[in-house]
Amino acid sequence: MRLLGKTVVVTGAATGIGRAIAERLSAEGAWVAITDRNEAGARQTANDICSNGRQAIAIRLDVMQSAEINEAIRRVLAERERLDIWVNNAGVSTMNRFLELTEEDWDFNMDVNAKGTFLCAQAAARQMVSQQPAENGLRGKIINIASMAGKRGNAPFLAHYVASKFAVVGLTQAMAGELAPHAILVNAVCPGYVRTSMQERELIWEASLRGISVADVQRLYINDTPLGRLESAEDVACVVSFLASDDANFITGESLNVNGGAWMD
Ligand SMILES: NC(=O)c1ccc[n+]([C@@H]2O[C@H](COP(=O)([O-])OP(=O)(O)OC[C@H]3O[C@@H](n4cnc5c(N)ncnc54)[C@H](O)[C@@H]3O)[C@@H](O)[C@H]2O)c1
Image 1: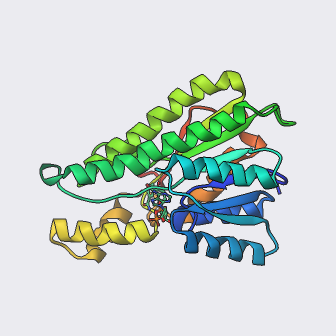
Image 2: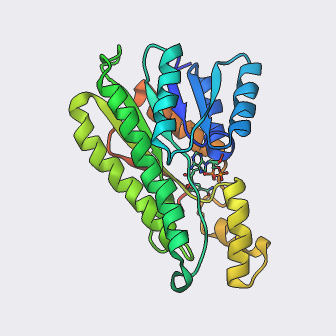
């Protein structure tokens, strides 16, 4: 129970990696606000967590809407004394050859993944700056879910997504530097090939773009991963739990690879 009593917000937590993070952090004792633009999905996740005797509430939050971000923080602080940890997980992807990429592809990926992370992180940091340090000496922690594609540009059909995730890795470093004097830590996690609904969509798009089967694309992902299997959402969630815990109180500006060895830089 290394997060006992901590107040956490997770974006995009209705499903996939965000849901696994919310489940893991609540199992570690945290009170978790499950936020998503999919309000029904957020409620389902929160209900499932509460039915296991843990603490969660659901809040509708589209990461591109500043008013919804501020309202979510207001609702959290109506129930809790402080905001300890904010996890920027919400993200989207589309796939296209670079020569066929549209402005729509670019804007959609950059708006949710890069701008959404910026808007949420800034709002969370403004709240944390206004708080007294907690017992561990910190005002708060921000954890961004970037991607292997935030470090490895050579990811076919994902130039726009790559750009959005490199932005998250860069933002993580810039924020970590500026917020360190306020005792706020900022880190990122970079997953590899994670089995979620995002991956299910990508398998179908990539199979079509390459003219091969979905099973063949899945084999490419596994062959690209030295540990020889697809990643689970829980593989990511336990590392987020580590960064959120007091075991990681001297780590900031880090973008941690959690990818089974698929990219080692
Ligand atoms: N699946 C992978 O292989 C993989 C790999 C590396 C990084 N990631 C990153 O992990 C994060 C989670 O991905 P996932 O695989 O769980 O995806 P997913 O599509 O399964 O789930 C994403 C969740 O984010 C929500 N969301 C989307 N846009 C939103 C918005 N504007 N505001 C609020 N919520 C929004 C969706 O409703 C959904 O619940 C993303 O940032 C993704 O880029 C995923």
